[in-house]
Image 1 (cartoon, rainbow, N blue to C red):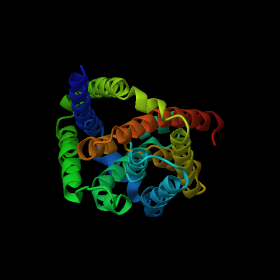
Image 2: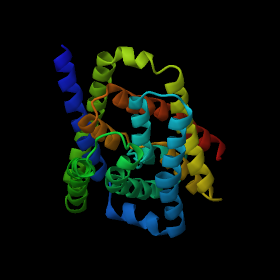
Image 3: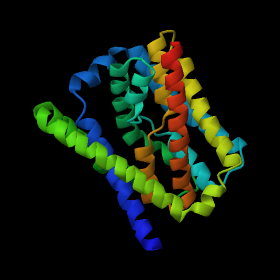
Image 4: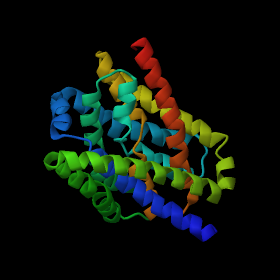
Length: 278
């Protein structure tokens, strides 16, 4: 039973990551991607928020709050992985600039693929991680499927629409399976999340959203998009790196817990933003 669950979890992670990339790429046009990125100043602010301020802020959390090494590693991974696929949907709920969120999401995701393996060893000096191995897995399992999907969408729009629905459903099933198998395999570890780990999670989610909001400028739409884009981290990239490079189950537990809590918090903020036009 234990072995079956472990296999289910590992396979589900791979299906979730690859399926997410294919589903997203099959649903995007090149115009949707590059048109919003012409605002150089805002893009620069978004990059600084996600890849400078957020990692430093989260690193500070790991220093101040007493956490196990596994939980710290999970938080650090999340801090340097941006570009969550759910951003456009959250932006739609917030009644904000959806086209801009699409371009920002893809930009953050592509940069993460190269940024994460380069920066991770500096934050986790005691961990034995290979920058090249991490980069290779991210390129092969995220960037290449995304590129293929974007190409298919550009030349075979009708076929892309059919397969996008298929991969979207497959991704949802994979996410459910990996979550259930993770909970069953690590029930005793999940109980330990209550306390300092939960405090750290809430600080991460609220703090990263606030960083994005404050750096979003005066325009309401961009402020909301950056708050959501900075607050929601890239669970696909972090799960891939965690399952292939770290044996400690607490790393993955932290990632999935943040993803669950983060989704509820981001949805709450998006709905409030949409209703009150904040």
